[in-house]
Amino acid sequence: MLLKVQNLHKIYKSGTHALKGVSFEVEEGEFLVVIGLSGSGKSTLLRCVNRLIEPTSGLVEFNGKDITHIKGEELRKVKMQIGMVFQQFNLIKRKSVLSNVITGKLGSLKTFESIIEKYSDEVYNEAYKCLETVGISDKAQIRADALSGGQQQRVAIARSLMQNPKLLLADEPVASLDPATSNSVMQYFEKINKELGTTVICNLHFLSLVRRYATRVIALRAGEIIYEGAPRDIDENWFKTIYGEEAEEVEIR
Amino acid sequence: MSKQTAVEAQMKNIIEENKKREHKYGIFQAILLDIFLVFYSILVVQRAIYYKFVLDIRDIPFSWLQIFIIFFISAVIGTSWALTRTSLSCKLFGVAKDNKVTKWNSELFGWFLFDITFIAGWIVTKISIIGLFSSEGLNGAGRLFSALFHPQFGIFDDALFAMIETIYIALIATLISIPPTLLISFFTARNLMRENKLTFAVYYVLRIILNFIRSIEPLIWAIIFSVWVGIGPFAGMIALLVHSIASNAKLYSEAIESIEEGPVEAISATGANRVQVVWHAVVPQIVLPFLSFTIYRWDINVRMATVIGLVGGGGIGTMLMQYQGLARWREVGLIVLMIAIVVWIMDYVSAKIREAIY
Image (tube, rainbow over all chains, first blue to last red; front, top):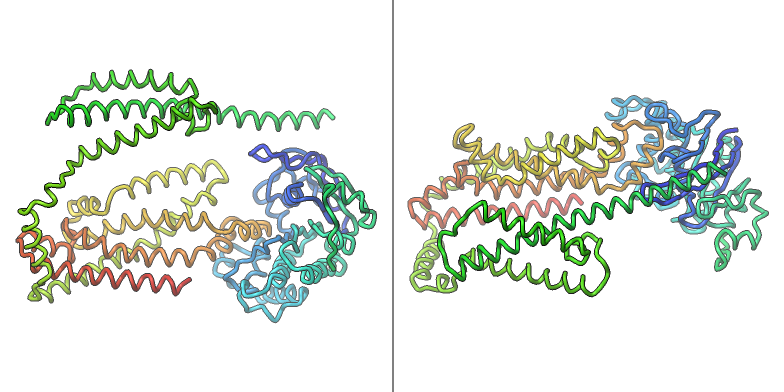
């Protein structure tokens, strides 16, 4: 078992109770999708898993190790094994695609080496390989903000691949992309999941994408898991429970 | 199940503690502010309006006992007023009752404060329309202006040299200020320092020191340093340097505070250490604003260098002071003209460079 989350609670300083006793497990090689309305705790959940934030109580176990409250060097080692892709891509806009990808490697580089930005050929080769995986190695020297949204997200995926992650987290990776681009970006996640065997946990909004890519689905509502199971079992009724009575399914292909 | 209820209780505790703390804090602040406002009103009405204007006393009597009595009275009034939860301060700190009395209280008292402040200000400034338009005064001003508009070009060479000196003083002050400012600005950026208590303490202390330095005008720094290192360009340069560091550190650190958090989050999620996060996620976002602020500071320093010259900081300001002391207004006219032209050029050039950078 790669990841085990048990009775996880997160209460922010403002008093918001974002997660209320979430428990689930993730096996190696799974493509787990988390769905739910905005504010249902999806982002908080992912950030508790790679410990960008510290859970209030409960247990997060990664690769057989309790990482719920670890700090410092120990935490950095764990973060290096977990890649993350964000909705807003979060690239360094003024830097080239290549330097952006290399930042994924920072954890295993020496501080001095990374500051003078002299990297070994190995690192460059690896960066090009990661760019090839997402199909944009020809754009390596271009400034990151000169790319389209979909291309930027692929660079972000390449950056997380530089970490050789055991687990890849994606926080609504296609929410700011158009439908066609969304699909192509999701295909790269699928490719990474199937070819490299990387476990993926992904927050998504569109059910059509969920049905197509997920091997398993968790639905969150107000910080609690209200559904767990196979994507094809989410019918009209479940959809209304998850997204509220007013919701209607939008198709995206 | 017991674990579940324990967590919920914890959440409720946090929320309620927050509320209580806010409330307690709010009423405490409201009392202090009310005491101050009442104290201020009584003092202003008594001393500026009654003594100075109504009685027209030149030397206003002063006794600590009287001040103390006034303070005591206002402490009583202010505290009891705030405790009724209907005062202006209660409204400001959000602890007031929501009724008509509060509305009337705060509106009336607000206008009262504004009115007495304006009236007292008018009296203190000794505003005199007659003085502004007396024929004697107008004649003097006329003589001065006509001299200024007929500049004496005999001293052009000297003035040019002094002007160049001024520009260089400003340039050196700006250049030397860059490295220390860079270093300090990272330690005074809230978003980089808030994580643990030690760094936050460093942040806090540095901020206070910088605020203190910045609150002292370069003119006063020039006076201090002209005593310290002797009158001349060096004193002026150090004065500008000190002020540039304090002012730019604030601008720089504000630029750091307003960066996008996303890339920082993304880089730290890769397992990079703190130095690497700052270098790869923060620095690329602030290079341009820093450059722009620095060029702008040079522009400001040229202007300030002329003023600093007035107190012996060297350059064109010192020259201006000499000719003004001799009442040679036509030479003063030339110097003023040259300062105006150079400041205008600097303003234009720095604006153009800053535009080009972005």
